[in-house]
Image 1 (spheres, rainbow over the protein chains, first blue to last red):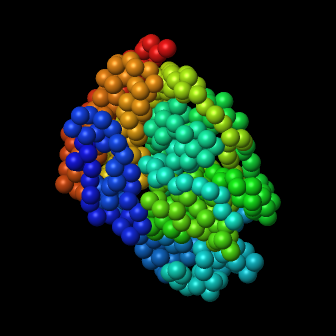
Image 2 (image 1 turned 90 degrees about the vertical axis):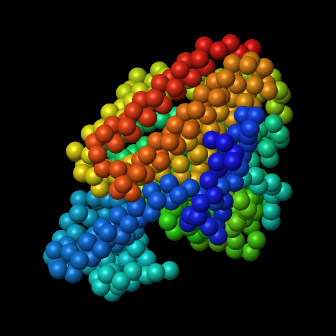
Length: 135
Length: 337
């Protein structure tokens, strides 16, 4: 990459930082240069989040229809996988998968629900009502 | 309480932590490209049976922790590395180091890192920062990918040091054990060893998913993605490839440009002009990775939809694999004093 080609596109790094890119000058010598972002990767990140939000919206819809417990919505929107959620809650992965069934979820104790609520940063009430704490 | 510490921004977090900690220890010659090259940081792997955020697991660099470890090792600098089961003990140890004027590297998770943009916060647990002081309840933090120093409250720091899931940091702390006086000769030898090891990792690992063979393997897979995954998911997979390749931390072109810069700096120590020629091959490879990313974007933006577009993407990767094979073969044979 040539120094003059270091991209200076808008990205979500704006107001946070610029990033370092290595590029060559007209003599072919490398140096570190600052970039505000690159449209190509901003789009890659953008469609990744579109997909996460779509998955979350689908999970919410299913939860409202009673086809799945509210957990799935929070798993999607918090970009969790089962390994990570198991590590944070102390549940086994197979337990978490069972808790995705509305009937099983509804039978969970306050203590068990609190574990999920803590990880997802919501109250038990909001966990059940699919309300995200936007902080 | 504050160690006298100088923050230098880097492209990549572990390079930056290694560089800044080694400079603090008295290794004034060290730069980001040197740390990356001596630490044999360049790599490629595609792990087909692992999924990260519903996409392919791809890395353009060596395993987290290796760059610091290898670089210190090559320079004969002893390292202190500790993990903790209890957050209290982790905090206590950190405070002792700060009191002793010792900045320390900390492995942290990104998800709860409050000074990062939300879009960048995934459950990725192998980020590296330096903690160099404390004022009231705030720890002073040098995150090498940020332009300036920042801070985290003790609650926030504990949360990221004890993030959970894959590669959980478990409060891991590391730093060079003592001040070091590294000679030019030591650097020269370390550069040579770093190059030879990196050539080995890229060429000789007996696995079809790693090194230059791993790039070919990925190309083979990409050709099947359209039929196997459908256009939408295949696009998301390519977006993930591009993110791993270009996202903050790589210096552009999947670390290939940093490696090119390293070979130029290596030339100052070795005076073998072949290093400069091979550096150009890495520039060419990095450029081709970026051309491939632009092409991939055509697919994930929905503009390119044909099988032949996936084939062309694969062709870029075959070409890259060939260039890197040639470059590393030359490096494995190069005579360095």
